[in-house]
Image (cartoon, rainbow, N blue to C red):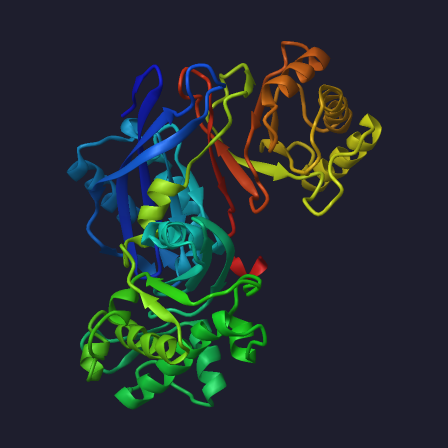
Length: 494
């Protein structure tokens, strides 16, 4: 539901989080404004975010432990759209994110195609522990807290299958990781004491304890406390030490935190978080298993381990809804205002592979067109397969200041590098950090001709990004919305 005037535009964004335990949806209203004075180059940014609909918290429907019930999830989303009085055509941006153990289900990727009908023109499917961690930390309020208090804080989003860590400084995420520990790795008969399911990561926890538990077995509260204590200790260990235990190392799903910064404060969000901030622990197996898992006890044990380690425990603005709110309000980035788009028929575009010819640690963009062409050719060839239909974008980082001559040379090198790979009927997509998208696009047009579809976007950093989605131009064509993401469903491959 897009509204606009000359210097502002309001868009509707959706966030859908399909997690290990719960599925949620939020709809948000984002205000995009030109914040520069009339005499300056436009500087467009998101100036306001308002959540206009929060769905009910639904249990994630499964057909069995290895398959998501896509039909039921579609029905849930359709019902929430109806309650919010919106249709897919009213949606301008946002993301669908599959998280935790659900991201490992056999049909996880196929589910995203099922949800495409609810996506509108520009909604992406995003997965992967780094993005999930950042969305949760921004949705919980940890990012804003770090900016307000001028101190580092870590948000730990503890759900049914994973614990996602994001460290924030001055509002920006500076470090992330993910641990395969959550409250639903051991399922118990709701309100009862009989084990009904044991996930693979829980087997690793039990092995580290030297304990065996079987499905159908009656479990005692003291045994659940021992398990929850070890899981909570592993979570806290991630932010305490670089020398991780063998169990924590085995359950890490991404590189560990660097811990090269001061860290005194912790926020905990996610489905388990409400029990971190309770005044008393669950006192019986029946209390622990109220939701069919051991989440309440894990939350209390995590509280005890955090306090014992000497960290300040800060209560977040959002707990169970942190990831979905972060997904709905934080997933979109805006390009600079000096972009170059030649032919817009292809937009929006989804799942564009990102090739990065010059990594950030390199000396920057080479000075010779031939050398640039060699780097580009090698980078593209690693991702390109003959006959592929997927779009490919080139992302240029590098710290070197670019003169007009440098930009001309870069354009020549790009053409040399992509000529044999990217067919003329596909758009040439360039993303560059520097504020020079328009001039680079004009140089490429001079080399390729006006018949070549060209998308050149600037002032975006794609350092930790594998794929992007590009939306339709906004603000009279002055900016382009972009969502950066990873499409990683077996997160062990990270």
